[in-house]
Length: 180
Image (cartoon, rainbow, N blue to C red; front, side, top):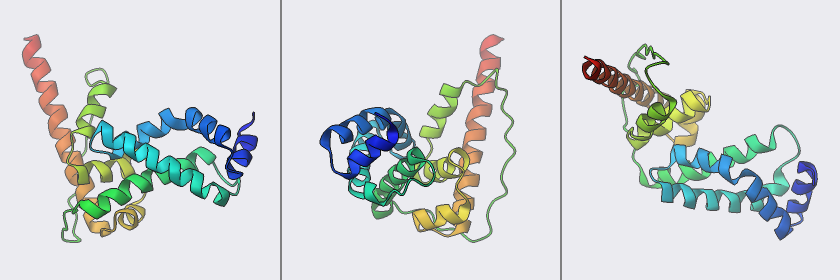
């Protein structure tokens, strides 16, 4: 069955089509949920809630743009909406920190290591970092999504980058010491 037919059947609330759509996209969208959730279990909950919203709002999808992108946006918004209710973002002066230059020796730092240290960032920093650096949202869009100022978004991104830079540098120093 083509994706267009699958979407059409989901719009008619066909349970089998919904199940097929879930199976087709669950892994990709779970990865999105993991980026914005503080635990594996929360990511699972966010995935389920996000799919419920997708099935509820699928009639609004007008075959314009990427369907996967449309679902991804719903997953991100679903996850962030929960955090808006419970997480307080650090409010800062509109003057943001300068963004540090981060040079990564790709032979020295693995992708798995980078993903792990990003996941270890404090929630507010991780969410802003992921939205900006990983998913390409602007500070204006992030400020609207998280209901913070653009200055707070910029500051949280700068602080996330500083933390990541420090962890990468510490890891590289540790590797040099171990190889000595």
